[in-house]
Length: 305
Image 1: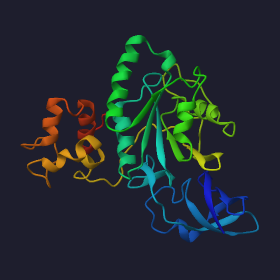
Image 2 (image 1 turned 180 degrees about the vertical axis):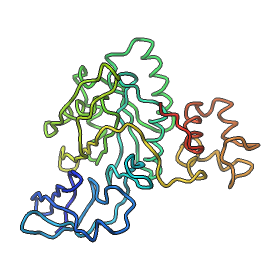
Image 3 (image 1 turned 90 degrees about the vertical axis):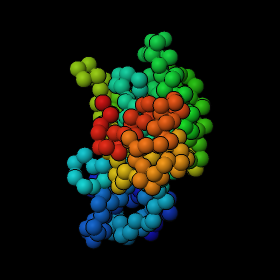
Image 4 (image 1 turned 180 degrees about the horizontal axis):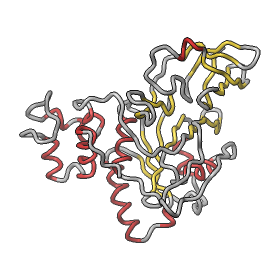
């Protein structure tokens, strides 16, 4: 029997089958040990085949993925963690403060999605707590991301009565939603559909960070052709399986320019002569924050704080 994984708890998987029933399935042992360098060999959004058993089912095969979004595992060295598979777009929910989402974190998320050419949406929540000056600062940030093809919105999940613009952006698609704990992800999703009822938590007064309220990734069916995948709050975003040479290809503003560098095949755009990307940064054609993110990824430094 075939189905789609809607929920993963680490040991058991909620599979929505072709017969319209929902089955709790486990992984057949052989599949679990099949040399997979992922902490979760089966992810939400995976299309699977499974055999029915006395209690639930046993997943026997994961069907080929058209894409997935993944990051470095924070628990197992040399492994990756797949947030979801077979998505049409990704939506990152960020906040300018309480907690602050760094541009470095945003850029790493966008690069991970761009490596699979998955369209990206960036939502800045909690506009209701920003000062006039902070609104102006954030306007500069959203204009930057709009200029490289990332659709951005500024909203308040608590105070905005009309979320129709965001609703229209997710219609007819499978959308993965991610963000730090405390950015209002669960609050926003609860408002998008009555089928979603995720628990919400307060911001810690001590750390100014959110508490984890979403424990496992889960897919929700909004309409027959519209699905949302909610994911646990992510603290860090480490890149997976990218060599230094290819990273600039995942920065849209660098993709074409890099072909005109003097040392096209060997230029890392760090300090090489006649580098078109460095020249573009110096002229202001490429934002300094984006270039700093690029450098941090290539050199292994960390600009996400």
